[in-house]
Amino acid sequence: MLATRQPVLRRFWYAVMPQSQLADGKPHGFTLLGEKIVLWQRGDGSIACLKDRCCHRTAQLSLGFLEGDHVVCGYHGWTFEGGGRCVRVPQRPAGQPIPSSYCVPAFRAEPRYGYIWVALDEPLTGIPELPEHGRDGWRQIEQFYEPWNIGALRLMENSFDSAHIAYTHRGTFGDMSRPETTPAEITPAEFGFLSRVASPVAVRGEIAQQVVRTDSSTSERRIESIWYMPFVRRSAIRYPHGVEHVIITCATPMDDQRSMIVQWAYRNDTEAETPAAQIIAFDRAVTLEDKLILESTDPDVPLAVAEGEELHMGSDRPGLLMRRMLGELLARHGETEQRRTA
Ligand code: FES
Ligand SMILES: [Fe+2]
Image 1 (spheres, rainbow, N blue to C red):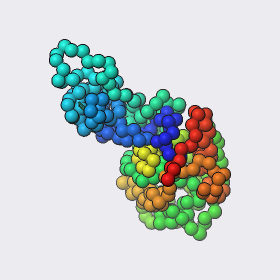
Image 2 (cartoon, rainbow, N blue to C red):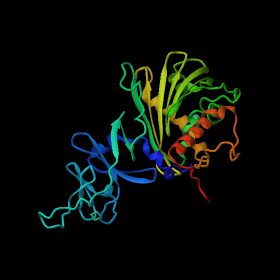
Image 3 (cartoon, rainbow, N blue to C red):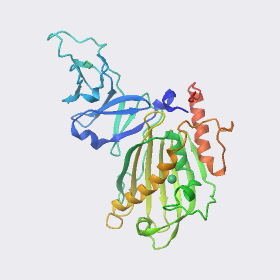
Image 4 (tube, rainbow, N blue to C red):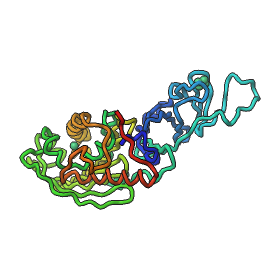
């Protein structure tokens, strides 16, 4: 599936950048599903988002600057309000009205959880609800914001693939002597599913022991994960010692080969118990193991699972369900799966 060629994928919310990036009072560009967009923050804290293409001579508005709540094109100074209407053409004689056709398309943008979320077309569902956010006794830890050369669906599948842990993560918490997996218990929802699985893990080295808060070299992870269609997952990892580590990972599709990895975590312990820097260092090591492998995979994931283009095993069931549900989503919206033709 090539995400940029499936219009229905424009009807979901995606985390595109940390809200703090907009605090510099400048317009910022991003590419979402192949669509270049420009974002900025208005004086009242609300977010404006337009197509990043001036309607005069196509220059990128993100190269311009802000004047109050408006963005000014850096080429000839045409000025746009957050709804996309051109409010000033500096070269026009004073008093001459600006035609309503002088405008650029606007998109929905909302700040939530410290990130800006954008939906390019009428959303089919809301921004995921994260129960730990702002809850007493929990803290939020920002982890990663970086582009990876992967198809977004590969990362989603990987997040629910318990068989990769023993091998991909053999350098951190994987245990190749115990490659068997237990089947996940999966409960489908309208736009995603809930999966529960328990797996034995290795706890190697001091940092890992501190993050898991154990002295032992083994532990068990009980993971309750939610897949929010199409490309967000929330994994709540519960260790026997009572520590809970909730990871939110968004694979925001920039185009058909690149995804912005936006990840943050919630923890129910304190900075004094486990410093955030250690948690990030551990998740960084784990994430780099995933990145190395995932960037070697074909970004064009086939949704049709029966054709034998890829082969499967039992532990692939969550990923196969994602493919099936995405295929059904496309069909409900009159689309067929688009693939690379070469
Ligand atoms: S291209 Fe934007 S003002 Fe001319
Ligand atoms: Fe992994």
